[in-house]
Length: 379
Ligand SMILES: *Cc1c(COP(=O)(O)O)cnc(C)c1O
Image (cartoon, rainbow, N blue to C red; front, top):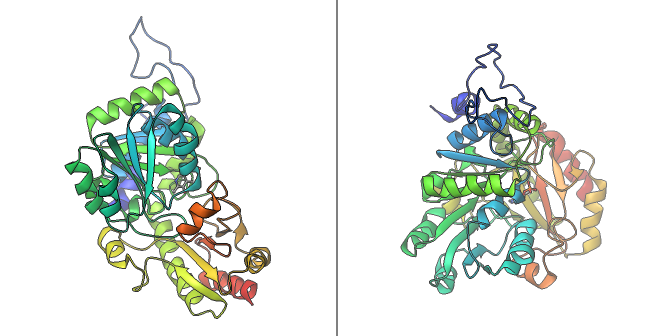
Protein backbone atom coordinates (compact mmCIF):
# COMPACT_ATOMS: atom_id res chain seq x y z
CA UNK A 1 0.00 0.00 0.00
CA UNK A 2 1.28 3.48 -0.79
CA UNK A 3 1.17 6.34 1.67
CA UNK A 4 -2.03 8.07 0.53
CA UNK A 5 -3.93 4.79 0.72
CA UNK A 6 -2.42 3.84 4.07
CA UNK A 7 -3.46 7.03 5.84
CA UNK A 8 -7.07 6.32 4.90
CA UNK A 9 -7.20 2.54 5.34
CA UNK A 10 -4.26 0.99 7.20
CA UNK A 11 -5.18 -0.73 10.46
CA UNK A 12 -8.83 0.25 10.11
CA UNK A 13 -11.88 -1.95 9.62
CA UNK A 14 -15.49 -0.97 9.03
CA UNK A 15 -17.51 -1.40 12.21
CA UNK A 16 -18.68 -5.01 12.28
CA UNK A 17 -21.80 -4.26 14.33
CA UNK A 18 -23.29 -1.58 12.06
CA UNK A 19 -21.12 -1.17 8.96
CA UNK A 20 -20.21 2.37 10.01
CA UNK A 21 -17.40 3.49 7.71
CA UNK A 22 -15.84 5.67 10.40
CA UNK A 23 -14.24 4.15 13.47
CA UNK A 24 -16.79 4.62 16.28
CA UNK A 25 -15.86 6.62 19.38
CA UNK A 26 -15.94 3.95 22.06
CA UNK A 27 -16.59 6.31 24.95
CA UNK A 28 -16.38 3.61 27.59
CA UNK A 29 -14.09 2.82 30.47
CA UNK A 30 -14.92 -0.87 30.79
CA UNK A 31 -16.28 -3.87 28.89
CA UNK A 32 -18.75 -6.51 30.04
CA UNK A 33 -17.24 -9.99 30.21
CA UNK A 34 -19.14 -13.17 29.30
CA UNK A 35 -17.48 -14.97 32.16
CA UNK A 36 -14.46 -14.42 34.38
CA UNK A 37 -11.51 -13.46 32.16
CA UNK A 38 -13.59 -14.00 29.01
CA UNK A 39 -13.59 -10.69 27.15
CA UNK A 40 -13.29 -9.61 23.51
CA UNK A 41 -9.75 -8.24 23.79
CA UNK A 42 -10.79 -5.15 25.70
CA UNK A 43 -11.03 -5.24 29.49
CA UNK A 44 -10.36 -1.69 30.65
CA UNK A 45 -9.72 1.45 28.57
CA UNK A 46 -6.42 2.45 30.20
CA UNK A 47 -5.02 -0.82 28.91
CA UNK A 48 -6.77 -0.76 25.54
CA UNK A 49 -9.69 1.09 23.98
CA UNK A 50 -10.97 0.20 20.48
CA UNK A 51 -10.83 3.77 19.10
CA UNK A 52 -7.32 4.33 20.46
CA UNK A 53 -6.34 0.86 19.26
CA UNK A 54 -7.45 1.67 15.69
CA UNK A 55 -5.35 4.84 15.77
CA UNK A 56 -2.32 2.99 17.19
CA UNK A 57 -2.50 0.47 14.32
CA UNK A 58 -2.93 3.19 11.72
CA UNK A 59 0.00 5.21 13.08
CA UNK A 60 2.24 2.15 13.19
CA UNK A 61 1.41 1.44 9.54
CA UNK A 62 2.15 4.94 8.27
CA UNK A 63 5.55 4.92 10.05
CA UNK A 64 6.35 1.50 8.56
CA UNK A 65 6.32 0.06 12.06
CA UNK A 66 4.59 -2.90 13.70
CA UNK A 67 3.60 -1.40 17.06
CA UNK A 68 2.04 1.93 17.97
CA UNK A 69 1.14 3.40 21.35
CA UNK A 70 -0.71 6.67 21.96
CA UNK A 71 -0.49 8.98 24.95
CA UNK A 72 -2.10 12.08 26.40
CA UNK A 73 0.64 14.32 24.91
CA UNK A 74 3.95 14.18 23.10
CA UNK A 75 5.72 14.65 26.40
CA UNK A 76 3.74 11.78 27.94
CA UNK A 77 5.03 9.60 25.09
CA UNK A 78 8.59 10.69 25.87
CA UNK A 79 7.98 10.09 29.56
CA UNK A 80 7.03 6.50 28.75
CA UNK A 81 10.04 5.92 26.56
CA UNK A 82 12.59 7.28 29.04
CA UNK A 83 11.06 5.07 31.75
CA UNK A 84 12.47 2.09 29.84
CA UNK A 85 15.84 3.25 31.17
CA UNK A 86 17.30 2.70 34.64
CA UNK A 87 19.17 4.93 37.11
CA UNK A 88 22.78 5.24 35.98
CA UNK A 89 21.89 5.04 32.30
CA UNK A 90 22.95 7.86 30.00
CA UNK A 91 21.25 9.49 27.02
CA UNK A 92 22.92 11.53 24.31
CA UNK A 93 20.51 14.08 22.88
CA UNK A 94 20.43 16.66 20.13
CA UNK A 95 21.39 20.02 21.70
CA UNK A 96 18.96 22.04 19.59
CA UNK A 97 15.65 20.57 20.64
CA UNK A 98 12.09 21.27 21.68
CA UNK A 99 12.12 23.18 24.99
CA UNK A 100 9.72 20.78 26.68
CA UNK A 101 11.94 17.84 25.76
CA UNK A 102 14.92 19.59 27.37
CA UNK A 103 12.76 20.27 30.43
CA UNK A 104 11.51 16.71 30.93
CA UNK A 105 15.04 15.34 30.53
CA UNK A 106 16.75 17.78 32.90
CA UNK A 107 14.08 18.54 35.52
CA UNK A 108 12.27 15.21 35.70
CA UNK A 109 14.57 12.36 34.75
CA UNK A 110 17.93 13.67 35.95
CA UNK A 111 16.39 13.54 39.43
CA UNK A 112 15.96 9.79 38.98
CA UNK A 113 19.60 9.26 38.15
CA UNK A 114 19.49 9.30 34.34
CA UNK A 115 22.19 11.46 32.81
CA UNK A 116 21.70 13.53 29.64
CA UNK A 117 24.34 14.94 27.33
CA UNK A 118 23.36 17.60 24.80
CA UNK A 119 25.58 17.66 21.74
CA UNK A 120 25.67 18.98 18.21
CA UNK A 121 24.79 16.22 15.77
CA UNK A 122 26.03 17.93 12.61
CA UNK A 123 28.16 14.83 12.33
CA UNK A 124 28.68 11.92 14.73
CA UNK A 125 31.97 13.04 16.35
CA UNK A 126 30.40 14.63 19.43
CA UNK A 127 28.14 11.61 19.90
CA UNK A 128 31.09 9.24 19.73
CA UNK A 129 33.01 11.42 22.20
CA UNK A 130 30.25 11.07 24.81
CA UNK A 131 29.44 7.38 24.35
CA UNK A 132 30.42 5.01 27.16
CA UNK A 133 29.16 1.71 28.55
CA UNK A 134 26.30 3.51 30.35
CA UNK A 135 24.93 5.07 27.16
CA UNK A 136 21.59 3.38 26.51
CA UNK A 137 19.82 5.80 24.19
CA UNK A 138 20.50 8.41 21.55
CA UNK A 139 17.75 11.00 21.16
CA UNK A 140 17.50 12.70 17.79
CA UNK A 141 15.12 15.47 16.78
CA UNK A 142 15.27 16.30 13.07
CA UNK A 143 14.54 18.78 11.61
CA UNK A 144 15.44 20.52 14.85
CA UNK A 145 13.28 23.08 16.52
CA UNK A 146 13.58 25.96 15.82
CA UNK A 147 16.91 26.04 13.95
CA UNK A 148 15.89 23.58 11.22
CA UNK A 149 19.15 21.63 11.40
CA UNK A 150 19.00 18.25 9.77
CA UNK A 151 20.57 15.24 11.46
CA UNK A 152 21.63 12.22 9.43
CA UNK A 153 19.49 9.48 10.99
CA UNK A 154 21.23 6.67 9.12
CA UNK A 155 24.68 7.82 10.25
CA UNK A 156 23.57 8.12 13.88
CA UNK A 157 21.89 4.72 13.72
CA UNK A 158 25.21 3.12 12.78
CA UNK A 159 26.82 4.60 15.90
CA UNK A 160 23.85 3.47 18.01
CA UNK A 161 24.02 -0.10 16.69
CA UNK A 162 27.81 -0.33 17.08
CA UNK A 163 27.42 0.72 20.72
CA UNK A 164 24.34 -1.30 21.54
CA UNK A 165 22.07 1.60 22.40
CA UNK A 166 18.60 2.55 21.26
CA UNK A 167 18.04 5.28 18.72
CA UNK A 168 14.87 7.29 19.27
CA UNK A 169 13.79 9.93 16.76
CA UNK A 170 11.33 12.75 17.37
CA UNK A 171 9.66 12.85 13.95
CA UNK A 172 7.15 15.59 14.81
CA UNK A 173 8.45 18.21 12.36
CA UNK A 174 8.91 15.91 9.39
CA UNK A 175 5.78 13.76 9.77
CA UNK A 176 5.66 10.18 8.40
CA UNK A 177 4.82 11.63 4.98
CA UNK A 178 8.27 13.19 4.64
CA UNK A 179 10.50 10.90 6.68
CA UNK A 180 10.34 7.36 8.14
CA UNK A 181 13.08 6.98 10.78
CA UNK A 182 12.47 3.25 11.31
CA UNK A 183 13.48 2.67 7.68
CA UNK A 184 16.68 4.62 8.36
CA UNK A 185 17.71 2.47 11.34
CA UNK A 186 15.88 4.09 14.28
CA UNK A 187 14.46 1.80 16.98
CA UNK A 188 11.65 4.05 18.15
CA UNK A 189 9.83 7.00 16.57
CA UNK A 190 8.14 9.59 18.75
CA UNK A 191 5.49 12.06 17.61
CA UNK A 192 3.81 15.01 19.14
CA UNK A 193 0.54 14.03 17.43
CA UNK A 194 -0.69 17.46 18.53
CA UNK A 195 1.07 18.94 15.50
CA UNK A 196 0.80 17.73 11.87
CA UNK A 197 -0.78 14.32 12.56
CA UNK A 198 -3.79 15.86 14.32
CA UNK A 199 -3.33 18.78 11.97
CA UNK A 200 -6.28 20.92 13.05
CA UNK A 201 -5.06 22.44 16.34
CA UNK A 202 -7.76 20.70 18.33
CA UNK A 203 -6.00 17.83 20.12
CA UNK A 204 -2.98 17.30 22.39
CA UNK A 205 -1.56 13.81 21.95
CA UNK A 206 1.66 11.82 21.61
CA UNK A 207 2.73 8.52 20.10
CA UNK A 208 5.56 5.98 20.03
CA UNK A 209 6.09 3.57 17.15
CA UNK A 210 8.56 0.69 16.93
CA UNK A 211 9.24 -2.62 15.21
CA UNK A 212 10.89 -4.63 17.96
CA UNK A 213 8.51 -6.75 20.03
CA UNK A 214 10.62 -6.54 23.18
CA UNK A 215 10.67 -2.74 23.09
CA UNK A 216 6.94 -2.69 22.29
CA UNK A 217 6.16 -4.87 25.31
CA UNK A 218 8.04 -2.47 27.57
CA UNK A 219 6.22 0.51 26.04
CA UNK A 220 2.81 -1.13 26.52
CA UNK A 221 3.71 -2.19 30.07
CA UNK A 222 4.65 1.39 30.98
CA UNK A 223 1.71 2.87 29.04
CA UNK A 224 -0.62 0.72 31.13
CA UNK A 225 1.29 1.07 34.40
CA UNK A 226 1.83 4.84 34.30
CA UNK A 227 -1.50 5.42 32.55
CA UNK A 228 -0.85 8.57 30.50
CA UNK A 229 -3.21 7.46 27.72
CA UNK A 230 -5.35 9.58 25.39
CA UNK A 231 -9.14 9.37 25.25
CA UNK A 232 -11.40 7.91 22.54
CA UNK A 233 -12.77 11.26 21.36
CA UNK A 234 -9.26 12.61 20.74
CA UNK A 235 -8.28 9.34 19.06
CA UNK A 236 -11.21 9.79 16.67
CA UNK A 237 -10.22 13.36 15.85
CA UNK A 238 -6.67 12.27 15.04
CA UNK A 239 -7.87 9.36 12.90
CA UNK A 240 -9.90 11.91 10.95
CA UNK A 241 -6.96 14.31 10.73
CA UNK A 242 -4.57 11.65 9.46
CA UNK A 243 -6.83 10.85 6.49
CA UNK A 244 -5.67 14.09 4.83
CA UNK A 245 -2.09 14.08 6.12
CA UNK A 246 -0.54 13.60 2.67
CA UNK A 247 -2.64 16.38 1.13
CA UNK A 248 -2.00 18.81 3.94
CA UNK A 249 1.74 18.22 4.25
CA UNK A 250 2.18 18.55 0.50
CA UNK A 251 0.62 22.01 0.66
CA UNK A 252 2.56 22.90 3.82
CA UNK A 253 5.75 22.10 1.88
CA UNK A 254 4.76 24.15 -1.19
CA UNK A 255 3.78 27.15 0.92
CA UNK A 256 6.84 26.77 3.15
CA UNK A 257 9.11 26.92 0.11
CA UNK A 258 7.44 30.06 -1.23
CA UNK A 259 7.57 31.83 2.13
CA UNK A 260 11.23 30.87 2.70
CA UNK A 261 12.20 32.22 -0.73
CA UNK A 262 10.31 35.46 -0.12
CA UNK A 263 12.03 35.99 3.24
CA UNK A 264 15.45 35.29 1.81
CA UNK A 265 15.22 38.26 -0.56
CA UNK A 266 13.75 40.68 2.01
CA UNK A 267 16.17 43.48 3.07
CA UNK A 268 15.07 43.44 6.74
CA UNK A 269 15.62 39.69 7.07
CA UNK A 270 19.06 38.48 8.07
CA UNK A 271 19.12 34.66 8.05
CA UNK A 272 16.47 32.22 6.86
CA UNK A 273 16.57 28.67 8.18
CA UNK A 274 14.88 26.21 5.83
CA UNK A 275 16.47 22.92 4.71
CA UNK A 276 15.32 23.34 1.11
CA UNK A 277 17.96 25.99 0.37
CA UNK A 278 21.00 24.60 -1.40
CA UNK A 279 23.24 26.61 0.92
CA UNK A 280 21.62 25.13 4.04
CA UNK A 281 24.49 23.29 5.77
CA UNK A 282 22.60 19.97 5.82
CA UNK A 283 20.72 20.32 2.54
CA UNK A 284 22.20 17.10 1.13
CA UNK A 285 21.16 15.07 4.18
CA UNK A 286 17.66 16.57 3.97
CA UNK A 287 17.44 15.56 0.31
CA UNK A 288 18.61 12.06 1.16
CA UNK A 289 16.28 11.28 4.06
CA UNK A 290 13.21 13.47 3.46
CA UNK A 291 10.73 13.50 0.58
CA UNK A 292 10.37 17.28 0.81
CA UNK A 293 11.42 20.07 3.16
CA UNK A 294 8.36 20.72 5.31
CA UNK A 295 6.40 23.81 6.28
CA UNK A 296 8.55 25.10 9.14
CA UNK A 297 10.66 28.19 8.45
CA UNK A 298 12.69 30.26 10.93
CA UNK A 299 14.36 33.62 10.33
CA UNK A 300 16.18 36.44 12.10
CA UNK A 301 16.13 40.21 11.53
CA UNK A 302 18.98 42.47 10.49
CA UNK A 303 20.37 44.21 13.60
CA UNK A 304 18.98 41.64 16.06
CA UNK A 305 16.86 44.13 18.04
CA UNK A 306 14.26 42.40 20.20
CA UNK A 307 11.72 45.21 19.64
CA UNK A 308 11.86 44.70 15.85
CA UNK A 309 10.92 41.06 16.30
CA UNK A 310 8.12 41.91 18.72
CA UNK A 311 6.82 44.42 16.16
CA UNK A 312 6.58 41.81 13.43
CA UNK A 313 4.72 39.50 15.80
CA UNK A 314 2.29 42.31 16.59
CA UNK A 315 1.64 43.37 13.00
CA UNK A 316 0.85 40.09 11.29
CA UNK A 317 -2.85 39.45 10.83
CA UNK A 318 -3.19 36.06 9.16
CA UNK A 319 -0.28 34.45 10.98
CA UNK A 320 -1.55 33.90 14.52
CA UNK A 321 0.80 34.47 17.43
CA UNK A 322 0.72 31.15 19.20
CA UNK A 323 2.74 28.21 20.47
CA UNK A 324 2.46 24.92 18.58
CA UNK A 325 2.69 24.15 14.87
CA UNK A 326 1.44 21.82 12.19
CA UNK A 327 -2.18 22.95 12.02
CA UNK A 328 -3.91 24.08 8.83
CA UNK A 329 -3.67 27.72 9.96
CA UNK A 330 -0.36 29.61 9.83
CA UNK A 331 1.24 30.38 13.17
CA UNK A 332 4.07 32.69 14.15
CA UNK A 333 6.16 32.21 17.25
CA UNK A 334 9.06 33.73 19.13
CA UNK A 335 11.20 30.92 20.60
CA UNK A 336 13.11 33.14 23.06
CA UNK A 337 9.96 34.22 24.93
CA UNK A 338 7.74 31.24 24.11
CA UNK A 339 8.77 27.65 23.35
CA UNK A 340 12.38 28.03 24.47
CA UNK A 341 11.92 30.21 27.54
CA UNK A 342 12.82 27.16 29.67
CA UNK A 343 16.28 26.92 28.10
CA UNK A 344 18.97 29.16 29.69
CA UNK A 345 20.03 32.14 27.49
CA UNK A 346 23.62 30.95 27.29
CA UNK A 347 22.54 27.46 26.22
CA UNK A 348 20.08 28.67 23.56
CA UNK A 349 22.34 31.32 22.03
CA UNK A 350 24.98 28.65 21.44
CA UNK A 351 22.55 27.01 19.02
CA UNK A 352 21.44 30.26 17.35
CA UNK A 353 18.22 30.97 19.25
CA UNK A 354 18.78 34.74 19.42
CA UNK A 355 16.42 37.61 20.26
CA UNK A 356 15.01 38.21 16.75
CA UNK A 357 14.59 34.57 15.82
CA UNK A 358 11.03 34.11 14.55
CA UNK A 359 9.54 30.72 13.76
CA UNK A 360 6.76 30.18 11.26
CA UNK A 361 4.50 27.20 10.95
CA UNK A 362 3.33 27.86 7.41
CA UNK A 363 -0.26 26.70 7.02
CA UNK A 364 -2.27 25.60 4.01
CA UNK A 365 -3.91 28.94 3.20
CA UNK A 366 -3.33 30.65 -0.18
CA UNK A 367 0.34 31.51 -0.13
CA UNK A 368 -0.11 34.94 -1.76
CA UNK A 369 -2.04 36.04 1.33
CA UNK A 370 0.62 34.67 3.65
CA UNK A 371 3.41 36.50 1.84
CA UNK A 372 1.44 39.76 1.73
CA UNK A 373 0.86 39.45 5.48
CA UNK A 374 4.57 39.02 6.20
CA UNK A 375 5.55 41.81 3.78
CA UNK A 376 3.22 44.23 5.54
CA UNK A 377 4.51 43.26 9.01
CA UNK A 378 8.16 43.58 7.97
CA UNK A 379 7.83 46.99 6.30
C1 LIG B 1 5.27 19.91 20.62
C2 LIG B 1 6.47 19.08 20.55
C3 LIG B 1 6.75 18.12 21.54
C4 LIG B 1 5.86 17.92 22.75
O1 LIG B 1 4.60 17.46 22.41
P1 LIG B 1 3.26 17.82 23.22
O2 LIG B 1 2.20 17.14 22.44
O3 LIG B 1 3.14 19.31 23.26
O4 LIG B 1 3.43 17.25 24.60
C5 LIG B 1 7.89 17.35 21.38
N1 LIG B 1 8.71 17.52 20.33
C6 LIG B 1 8.48 18.43 19.37
C7 LIG B 1 9.41 18.55 18.22
C8 LIG B 1 7.35 19.24 19.44
O5 LIG B 1 7.13 20.15 18.49
